[in-house]
Length: 132
Image 1 (cartoon, one colour):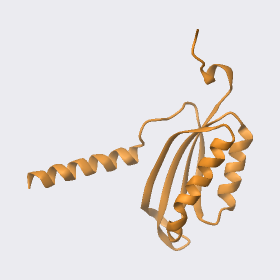
Image 2 (cartoon, rainbow, N blue to C red; image 1 turned 60 degrees about the horizontal axis):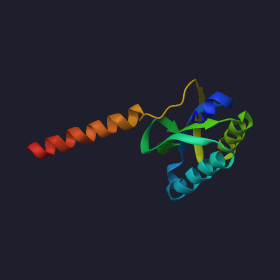
Image 3 (cartoon, rainbow, N blue to C red; image 1 turned 45 degrees about the vertical axis):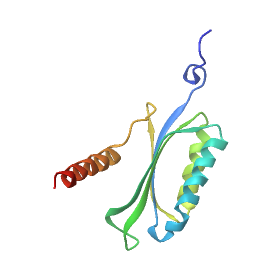
Image 4 (cartoon, rainbow, N blue to C red; image 1 turned 180 degrees about the vertical axis):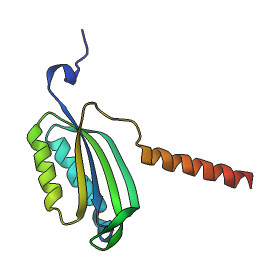
C-alpha cells in the first residue's frame, strides 16, 4: 500500500514569516514564540523550519530602537484564513516591531543563510583559537 502524502490530497500553502520583537520584552520572547507555534498547530498546520536568530542590530532605528530579537518560521497550512489570523495578531501585538509574511511555492526545511553564516563564522573562530 502506498504511503499517505498530504500534498496529493490537500491543497497546502507554504509561508515564511519573519518577525522582530521589541528587545525591551526579552523576558516575553519565549511566550510570544509559543503563542504563534500553538496557533499554527491548533489549526492543523505545522512548522517546517523554526529559527531564533536572537538579538541583532537593526538596519535603521525603529521607534528609537537599534536592536531587536528576530524570529523566522516556515509554516505549512491548509487553511488560508489562518494566515490572515496570524497577520492580524502580528499587527496588533504591541511587542512585535515589524513582520513580513511571504507565500512560497515549496516547503523550506534547510537552514537559512543567516544561521549558516553564523555557524561558519563560529567554526572559523574556533579554528583560529585552536591554532593560537
